[in-house]
Every structure is written in C-alpha cells, then in structure tokens.
Image 1 (cartoon, helix red, strand yellow):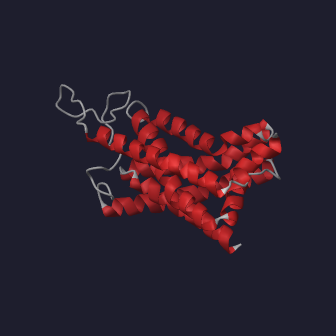
Image 2 (cartoon, rainbow, N blue to C red):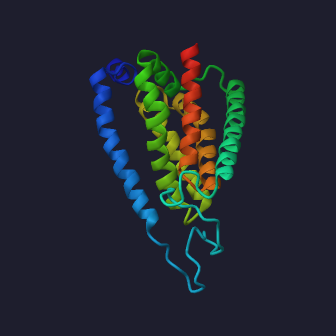
Length: 232
C-alpha cells in the first residue's frame, strides 16, 4: 500500500542502502569508463579538414565540448576558466532558484518539494551514509549520465535540444517516484524548483568543457544543503 511504498523511500534499512550502493557503484564505474573511451575516439573530419565537433544543425562550427575530460585533465582547458564557470554557475543557480521559489510562494502557497523532504529525513536518520551519497556519489553518477552522456551527445545536433532533454531527465530523476504517492499536480509543482539546477549545471559543463565542473558545483550545492539540515 501507500504507507509501505513511502516507507521504502523514507526509512530504508541499512542492508537496503548497502544493496543500492553495491548495485550503483559498478554501473557508475562502467558508465564513466565507456564515456571516456568514446571521448578518446577522434572526431570525423569534413572536406575542409576541420573535425566535426558539435557543429550544430546549421553547419557552422561551435566551440568544442568534450564528453568527459579524459585527456585534458581535471580543469579542462584551464584552471581559471574552470573556477569562473563554477562561480557563475553558482550565482545563476541561486538567483534562478530564488526567483522560482518566490513565484511559487505567490502562485502556489503551501507547495511541497517532496524529494527535499525525503532526503532531509534520510540525512537525519543516517548523516554519514547520506552525506557520502548526496555529496560524492550522486553528483558523479548524475553528471556523468545527464551532462556527460545525454547533454554531450545531443549537443552535437542541437544546443537547445541538449538543454531541454537533459533538464527533463534531471528533473524526472528526482521526482518520478512521487507520482505514485501524491496528486500529479502537486508533484509537478515539486519538479519546478529543480529546473534552475538543471540549467545551471548544463551551462557550467558547456562553459568549462569538462565534466568535473558540474560535478564540483553539484557537490557544493548538495554539501550546503546537507550542512543546513545538519545545523538545523
């Protein structure tokens, strides 16, 4: 029933968490390795001798966006570009989040962000394990999949399509389970606050040209959230 299903998300047993981690970690490692191998392949060239790197539908060259920073190093093209991308992405995220929350407070007072509530309960129940999951494991897995694989692949065809699909996937990943527990309208409202993070993380990846930039920003955002929960 509803209570049993809800309990699976809000009160997992220790062996359940171990099972989840044992299943997720090998998948994450295999996914990262396959993306790295794909990024290492040389891009096809056109008649002009230039590599076909995310030229877009118009055929005009776009800036290079590697799928993952296997050969270019942790900071991608440069350290200061990496830092600038994270700082600007952080500002973009919090400014957009404030605007979205302000609009929701005015238009739909009393709305609930279900995933935040669930994560908050899990952090309070097992702070050490959930800190590892939310600050380290989740950013690596989610950014490798959503930005590295989906955004990076679609960006070859269309920049707008890359943003739309990756944002939808990111929001859906954090809210899909609640459609079975709560009214669809309230869950859709719960999805809206995740859009700023989805856009900001995609922009950071695009600007920095290394997957480690959105991973770092994602980890910082989650770390601040866990810190607020811990202090409160």
